[in-house]
Image (cartoon, rainbow, N blue to C red; front, side):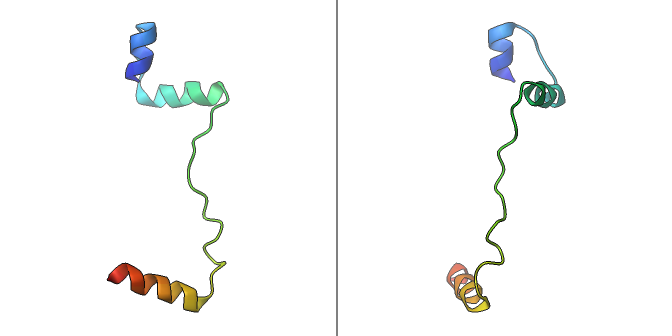
Length: 53
């Protein structure tokens, strides 16, 4: 939002910035949970054990 103000001199509320970006064709980049169920139970348990160490 500061960059918009620095370049244009106009202050926008955070929500309005999202509306403008959506209107201009931008989309939020968020991770997609594609492979959650792809691993076997054994692989999931092995991964969990490594995180605890």
